[in-house]
View 1: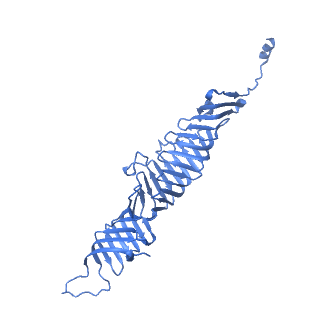
View 2 (view 1 turned 30 degrees about the horizontal axis):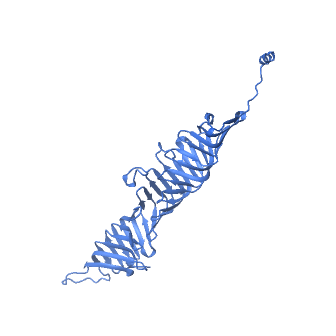
View 3 (view 1 turned 45 degrees about the horizontal axis):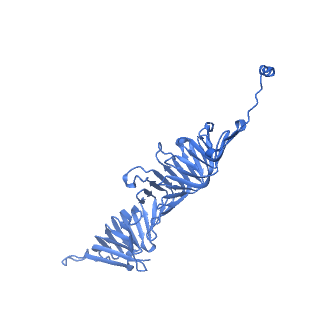
Length: 393
């Protein structure tokens, strides 16, 4: 275990509590009085000789027998490759066993100095330098410009810049025109469980179940997302939701179930190459791969599009629909089948409404192609009067 025996230790001795008048008898005590320092500076180098961390305080008390040092308003730096990577501060600091354990309490703050400038806060931090481990307790919070993560507890590994969040965790995210420190309601809320976040690379992973609330209740187009777990990268601004993924649009009585899906949260896009099924009003939509623009309320099916309603079905190479308006566009070898009259209509493109396929009345033939329709008319039995008139003709 590393200790302050391996640490450069510079302190200015102010006074000791054991000094008193020679006229009065001294009480015999087995305990040495604490040393009081009017300034304190601590630094530590790793085994390769590179600076690991340094701490300073305007005042400290060292209890020799107990090997405990207490100080107020500590400030310090954490180093990576001999360069400052994080600043650290707190209201008070206790160093146990000459550095085996460092306890920081009250307004603990770790500030990333490069990259996303992520800040970690907590009420108490137990630092074990020999294990390169910081245990952050009492509601740890990590924030950057657009996000805030709140966990039950957390572990931080300074050398790897890895933050592990433990227990039920909530992640708030703000859009590009807002910031986390403005006091505004977040645009997206993610509920998850144990996970990790590398503050240098942005790599993020978390166990499920994952539940995501998107937007306000009355304004959100896509309200809920659910997944079994997530991974992603906050530097590149995406999250991968692991199958099964469910998207719910209650305002439009619609839902979608898909395989693993990537969410580009700054662009507000959802994409997947996997097969999916969606329910939009009275219509069921299936296909392979989609691109969803949340701002445009549009889903584009990338291949093998099928739209079906009771008694009617459309198949096409590609299709898109707007779940707010219900309008649908199908392209490429379009085939519309209606069970009534066994109608089959073929064209290169078709437009209509996903809410009621009976409104598919506009058929567009691209590049001068033809629209083909086949159907069967039911024979109607004529009355004797009509039969006589036909014979007379």
